[in-house]
Amino acid sequence: FLPLGLRVLKKIENLIRAEMDALGGQELLMPALQPKEIWEKTGRWESMDNLYKLIDKEKREFALGPTHEEVVVPLLKEHAPSYRDLPKAVYQFQTKFRMEERPKSGLLRGREFLMKDMYSFHADQGDLENFYEKVKTAYLRIFEKCGIGGLTYLTAASGGSFSKYSHEFQTVTVAGEDTIYICSHCSQAVNKEIFKNEDNCPHCREAGEWREEKAIEVANIFDLKTRFSQAFDYTYKTKESDDRPVLMGCYGLGLSRLMGAVVEALSDDKGLVWSEAIAPFSIHLISLGEDQKALAYYQKLTGEGKEVLYDNRDLSAGEKFAEADLFGIPKRLVVSAKSLARGEIEWKNRMTGEITYARADS
Image (cartoon, helix red, strand yellow):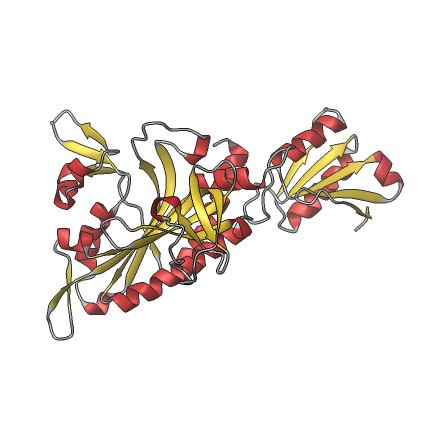
């Protein structure tokens, strides 16, 4: 990630952090390097075919974490042993490693990527389901702020060994690797892997009338039930001092993949298009030979708390305008002798392309 891209990534991280904190999540940071023993407890040391395995000079074996159930469950077992300690939700932003056979499409499919993973712990199924629904809503708010709300669909997917269904969030774009079918009744979707045209929609239960689309998976959530708590004998004490297994949910969101999905979904033939919430800067200020006046605007705008990228390089107007479109910053402000002679400055909305003029002294 170069400077502008890193600013976008950090904006996405902060946006997600605010939503996870609002859910009551507590942020932590767990190790990427994980001992073999904890993976053996869940049986995934041998069963996961995309696990990076390492051996140190003492012949100890480790995995580079593709996920963190094996770490977080023993951790919470120490800190939430009673019903009084539940529910709990913890999350992190962590680099994940998965041995993809064919990494491709830049940020969309790689062996190393940045992910937010949250894990919730509950005493009963009703409480887990209630929290699960809150995460769904929080994720949809995140995608809306990133500018892809209208293109991102809650998608039923196979639950694997955990439950009948899990849920993905799929963003429609021709660059997508997944195929989804969108229900005409509720506008939610089903992944191709579990799709049968004659089935009723798992969301609204209406008879299927489907629209096929290509999409990018940007997030997923799972009801893990007791799969991992049982592996580590993680139980809680009830009011009656009985021991019961803790129920878990898992909620993943790939930051770098989300960034790539926004690029694929919103870019046009001129370059990137960022929403206000995640743009590297809010204003791209261009001086066309009027550096003194432009600098005064820069100081005024930054003094008001605006994030401004200031371009006073010795390049042609065409070159500067083309780069401004390429960078995708929401608003472009041009200070030129021509507009100043009219007592105006030029504003351009990158998303709509609309150009407006404001008084130069405003």
